[in-house]
Image (cartoon, rainbow, N blue to C red; front, side):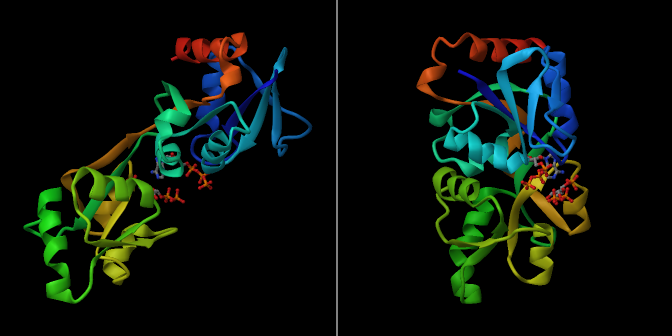
Length: 231
Ligand SMILES: Nc1ncnc2c1ncn2[C@@H]1O[C@H](COP(=O)(O)OP(=O)(O)OP(=O)(O)O)[C@@H](O)[C@H]1O
Ligand SMILES: O=P(O)(O)OC[C@H]1O[C@H](OP(=O)(O)OP(=O)(O)O)[C@H](O)[C@@H]1O
């Protein structure tokens, strides 16, 4: 059985992903030319590389069309219900750090915690004639955090596909859930993170699709051990 590893073909995780595999002893080369979407590992006919975007990798792991992938924990948990039952987070790779956070306008002076936000959400319809709106592309993580962890049910998610931090100022949503690393985009948009508003501390991970045929497969065990050993 050939083991397929999905690696980012572009974006912020591309270079670090190939570097971690190289340190683990797997030298990745593109098949054909540099723009090819298939790759191989030098000296290994039992491992194939699929170059995909970070979000495609989480989808392909979910579908089981790749055995392993390097991608952000946020993308896996957002893309997949019951993620821990369906994938194994084999190693945290130490790059691609970003937090998925709840942020509100700085001028909401009396809103600092999720409990404060729950109070705002409960009053919102009476005060404004509509529900509190949240701009995000992380609708699954948002629902789990608001409804599951904090018992906040009165809100509406407005799907945002870009420039999420601009939504409160433009009036398309009241608050946001988005990724932050340096925090400068939030500051520039006059938003503050709630003190208990960090939903997930994400980083790049080696992720394995849980498949019965991996049981006892020496290449699967070797990939995990080699990547862990390279950290
Ligand atoms: N400042 C940041 N902004 C956005 N994502 C970040 C940041 N820092 C780290 N990441 C992580 O990078 C990953 C997304 O990577 P990237 O933006 O390169 O993907 P992409 O190639 O744009 O994917 P796609 O085009 O499929 O959306 C996510 O897991 C995210 O958590
Ligand atoms: O906390 P910061 O360091 O300011 O980073 C956070 C911002 O970076 C990302 O956007 P980016 O401009 O990289 O574009 P993308 O959403 O297309 O990845 C992300 O969507 C945030 O908007």
